[in-house]
Amino acid sequence: MRAWSVRTPGPVEGEPLVRVERPVPEPAGDELLVRVRACGVCRTDLHITEGDLPVHRPGVVPGHEVVGEVVALGPAARDFTVGDRVGVAWLRHTDGTCAYCRRGAENLCPASAYTGWDADGGYAGYTTVPAPFAHRLPDALDDVAAAPLLCAGIIGHRALKRAALPPGGRLGLYGFGGSAHLCAQVALAQGARVHVVTRGAAARRLALDLGAASAQDLDTAPPEPLDSAILFAPVGDLVPVALRALDRGGVLSVAGIHLTDVPPLHYATDLFYEREIRSVTANTREDAREFLALAARHDVRATTHTYGMPDAPRALRDLKAGAFDGAAVLVNEG
Image 1 (cartoon, rainbow, N blue to C red):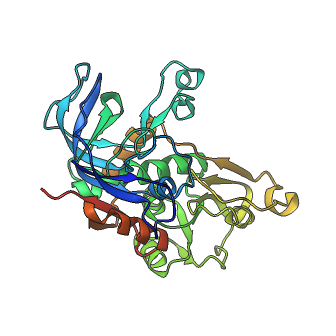
Image 2: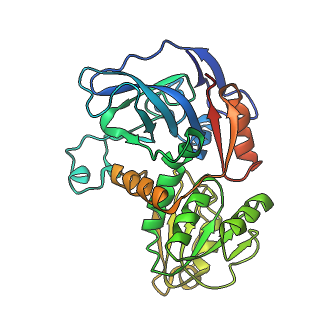
Image 3: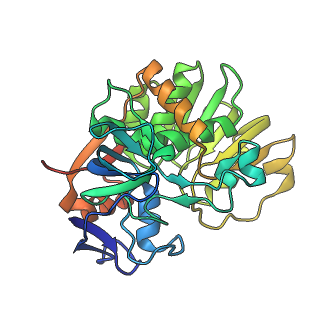
C-alpha cells in the first residue's frame, strides 16, 4: 500500500513527509484492519511532522481522524464485523489497570498510546485499531464530514468541559480552526454566547456565520468579560491575553498538545479574583462517545476542504499557513 511517512521531522515547507510502499498491516490480537476512506488533517499531525513533539515511532505514518471500513479482524477482536464503518481516533491504548484508568481518567494513563504517533495512522491505504478503541459513527454523516469529529471535535468537547462554562455563559475561543469551529457549535447549541479571537479573516467570517456574537482579530479584546475561554491556537503569548479577558472566577482551558512558551504572568492582572488556567490532555473514550452523541443531536457539522491522499504535504502546508477555514480532510480514491 502507499503511505506517507515522517522521514525526518522538520518544517513542512521542506520534505519531512515521504511517500513510501508498505505492506498492508496484519491485524493482531484484538485489532481491526481498516481500509482508510478519509482521514482528517489535524494540527497534531503538523506538530509530529515538524518535530514539535518528540519522535515516538521513527518513520511513523501520521493521521488519527480516520474513517474507514473494517476488512479483517484479529483473532481476539470483538463487537465489529467485516464491512462495518468505524472511526479511528487519537487514543489507541490504555492499560486499564492504573490508578488513572480506574478512576475514569484514562487520558492520563502513563501507558497510553496514540494513533499516528506511537502506531501508524491514516495517511495510508490501511491502518489498524484495537477494537475497544474503535468508534461507531453517526449514519447521517458521510466520511468527509465525520473525519474531523474524531479528534478536533472530541478534543474541543473535552476542552469545553475543562473550561467549566456556566449555563448561558460567555465563552471566548482563541484560534478558530478545525477544533474550535466544532466546539463553538456545541457551545451555541447549549445556549452560550461565543466570542472568537483569531487572526484569519475567513475564520472570523465562519465564526459569525455559525452564530458567534463577535469575531475579533488578535489585537482586539472580546466586547464583554468572559466566564470561560479556550485557547486553541498553539501560541503561549495568548495565555495572559485570554486570562485578562476573563471575568472574576473565570477559567481558561488550553486545548493543544503543544504550546509555545508562556510569558511571565502577573498575579494581580492575570490570576487574581480566582481566575484559573487548566490544561487538556488527550481524551477518554467516554469523551468521544459523549461528543459523537452531541454531534448527532445538535447536527454539528465540520466545514471541510478535501485533498487527495497524494496531496497530504500540501494540506499540512495549507494548515500551517491558515489557508482555509474549518478542517482539511484527505480522501482515498476507490
